[in-house]
Image (tube, helix red, strand yellow):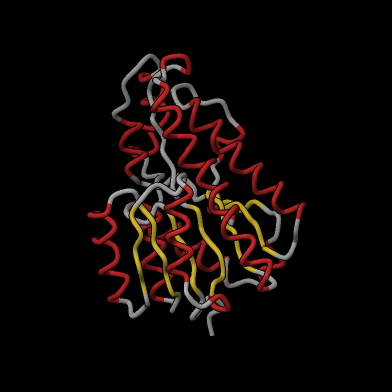
Length: 249
């Protein structure tokens, strides 16, 4: 019996890439899903394959950096006892420009996706999870959190902040299992954007990301999603406060 079966989880960034693959994987394991993505059209396109897996699934379009969107997700959560928490897979790369070239709206978009979204999810989910005595908070990290990669300044900073935010949550309470999952180098829209990057650091970005594709080093979204789903079948207290990398699992 899956530890996740009949539990309700929020999954952000669910309309494409690893988030979409994860939604389908979890639906197949009997998880009740609340899916979030900014595009309503793309969100509808992932709800259907999840429903075909037999899982109960609902979609809420909007940016989880905005409080009202997360409030809508919580209203949809329904049965408090079945609500298990969230997986925050949303992220924006914005590759190419030098750090000083990034327009403010783009910088804010990257930070909103990873950092403010993480804050809003914890803000609204943790009180409910603490009342019921436990739950799960999964944050998508990246090796970029520990590196300075030319042309990805905002993303590197955002992932470093998101990963440290998990560590803060983990030391403040162990009732909710908080962890970081680094999904590996995956063939996603982000990778394609990096291979086609423009801006002051574009050549350096393309020279870093391009060879991964050429050498066949990119994992599929489905493979990375499956590894995370398998990880979450372990007793959750054993995962608390830790960072897990797809390539090491």
